Length: 414
Image 1 (cartoon, helix red, strand yellow):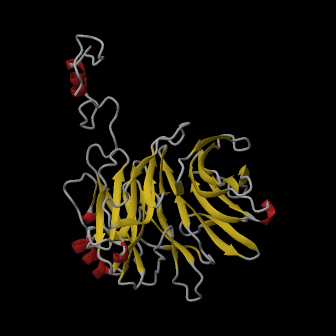
Image 2 (cartoon, one colour; image 1 turned 45 degrees about the vertical axis):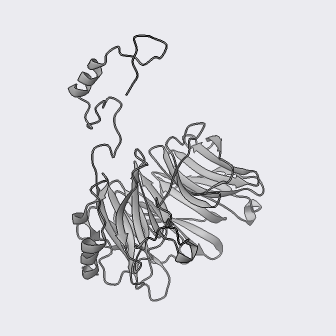
Image 3 (cartoon, rainbow, N blue to C red; image 1 turned 180 degrees about the vertical axis):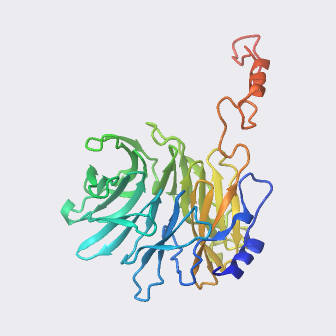
C-alpha cells in the first residue's frame, strides 16, 4: 500500500480519542483512499468529495500539469482507483451526490464550464458538459439537480441563480431560478433536492433564499433576513439542517439552523475550536446529523502571552447537531502533518493529510456512535434509543401529572 509507513504512524500516534465523548473515530477502520503510487491529490478545500457510493478527487499527477479527476468506489475493499476525466484545466472544486460528481474548470472560449460525471460504471464514466455562459462562483449537486450562480457579460454582470435537472444526461433541463438586482451577489449555495438554498448580499445586508424546485419553471421562493454584521460565506444542507462558516463581526464562527425551511431562522453559533488559540481552517461539511471541519492553531504573532498555546497544529473536529455542546476532536496532528480538508458521507469521514509538505494523501475511517448521537424519537422517554414498554411505564407513572403553575395540585417539573 502506498505510504504504508505513514499510515501506521497515523494510526498509532496522531489519532486522538477521548472516552469522554460519544463520537469517536474507529482507528481500526482507517484506510488510505489513494493507494496508487502515482496519485497526487490536491488535498485542500473542496478538491475532493465523498458520498455513500464513491470518493472523487482532483489529481495533479499528469506531467503536463493539467489536473485530472479520479475516484474510488466506497464498496471496493481494494480501493482500486479509476480515471474519470483526464482533462480538467484550471480545476476549481468538486462536489458529489451518489454516483454523480460535479466540478468546474476553465475552458476557452467559455469563461468556465461545469461537468457532471456519472461514475455508476467506473470502467466507462459518462460526462455531461454544461456551458453556463457566466463566471460560476458557487455550485452544488444533489440527487437529479445541479445548481450554480455567478455573473457575466450576457447577464449585465448581475448574479444569476440557475438549476438544472440532469437526470437525463442526453436532455438536461435548465431553469433560471432568480436574477439578483444590481450590486447584489450570491456568497454561497447548497442543494437538498428539491430545495435550493442560497445566501445573497446587498449593501443593505444579507438574505437567505429557499427555493422549492418541485415546479422549477415557477419555483416557490421564500426569503429570510439575516442578522446585521453577519456574513455567511459558505453553507451545507442536509436533513433540513443548514451549517455554515460565517463572520460575526471580526470572529469566524460556525452557525447552525436546524429548520432552514421555516419562515424564521433560529441561528445557533458554534465556536469552531472551542479555545482561544484555534480557528477554522476548512469546512464545515454536513451529512445527516453530523458535521466535520478542520481547525489549526493561530499563529503566535496573534496571541497574547495570557492566552493558552495549542501544542498541536491541526485538528479534525466533529459534532452532532443534536448535541452542539459536545464538539469532539477526532484527529490531532502536529504541524508537519497538515490536515487540509474533510468530508463526511453517512458514518464515513474522508480527510486529506500532508506529510512534511511533500504531498497530500486521502484517508478514510468510520465514526463510532453511541446512543443519542442520532437524536431521540419523540416516544423515547427514557432516552435508551428504543421506544418500548419501558417508555410506556415511564409515561404511566406520571399519567395526568401536570406542571401548570395556576393549579394547586400541580408540582414543579424536573
